[in-house]
Image 1 (cartoon, one colour):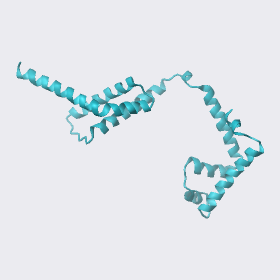
Image 2 (cartoon, rainbow, N blue to C red):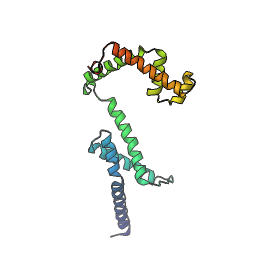
Image 3 (cartoon, one colour):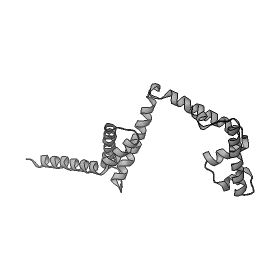
Image 4 (cartoon, one colour):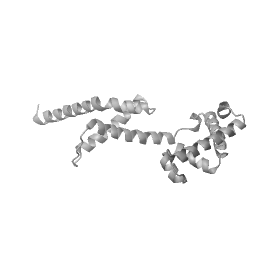
Length: 180
């Protein structure tokens, strides 16, 4: 065998060992990531193959790349590729795959809840939104809505909730009224 053929064979063997090592290090976390996000094993394999190609191109490029943790780097590439794949796949998903009745029922429930929240008044609605939806701490609620302290803001929030509860009681509404 000629020296050139031996070098080529050695290079092929080295590449195989390189890729096998990467598979052992990083395929399992990538497959778990894809599976947790609704992907199949075949999709995980495809994503990982693309990840390896990108990684190999990066490593063999003329640019010097300092990669500290190969596994984390590969997982990062795979996450980005999966997100791109998922976004592209969602755009092409037909509408008949969705449970339209469930979506309509959910919207009706939301509309009913909003209606009863609105009966408490605009200020209460804003206060409850800031606390529950925007996750504003009570101290910041007090400042934003002009209360003298956190205790006053807490009492105001409680009174707003009581207004909504009273409206629901007055109309003799039950939990089932919101989910039917």
